[in-house]
Image (tube, rainbow, N blue to C red; front, top):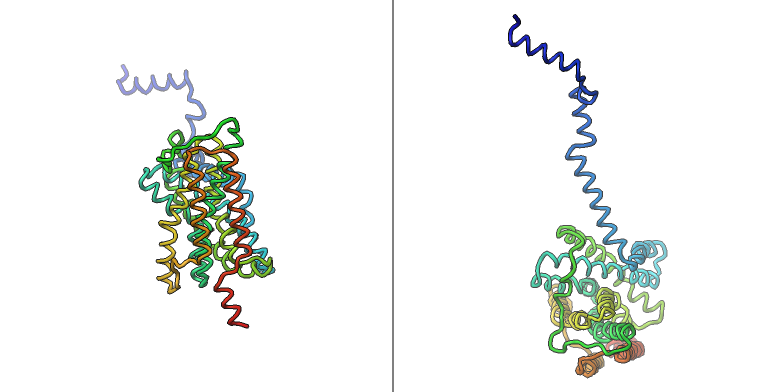
Length: 364
């Protein structure tokens, strides 16, 4: 008679002989640990996930828009500045390099607004939606170029009311040429426009991209402002024309694209909200912000615009008000707004700033 323990041992040996253990099950414990640490460990999976996430973010933010083809012009402007010092080319290349950054900054702001709700989202849009103009204004104030700041802010208002809205009306009228597009005069939508969309990047990814884009725009804005006077001399273009026309076109790249896109989708209320809302943000937030920053820097930044600039703004506001009073739009109204903007551009090209004339007389 064998004991119970001996029987158990014999039965176990018999089962082992009948059904041998597979090579994988016979592997040494050290081999299992090494295999897990290199191919199936949580750390390795986390690294793979983070790498894929970064690649996906780069693809979404940097490769999803055709306007991002202009991104290399930013580093090229810095390279040209150090190699040649030609302010005309530096200014031109910097303008091209800032355009996609301004558009992507608006995109990152919209993505973050998905997670913050309409109230905070509206504040974010007011802050970062015009961040390009504000950064350029801060660097201009730092260099003592108060008139450039005043004229660029005025030009941003005119650009949104005339050029952005005019292009939206024109493109929407061409796509929907068989009818007049209708919008609500009483309720202009600046929010509820992305109800059927979902965020493409996470909240913290949006914050990181906002920080990166803002920092890069700040760097390029410094080179842009430093090259304004040199570009004016090299191209024989008045600084007033550069400030009122060229600089705002760069800052309004995001609003321009959004307004046209929504107008072509027959969502004219949103296009109107983008254009008029951006002008309101500049008037109610951007200009007072620059006044406060000027005071902090010891610069005489004020709201004392010249008579010509004030008259131009007043007349253009009346023109836009008359065109919007019917609550309809078509390609012809858009063409009228664009022509008005061209008239403003031509007038600032030939107009001489009274302060500049006084300075020339004093020098002579």
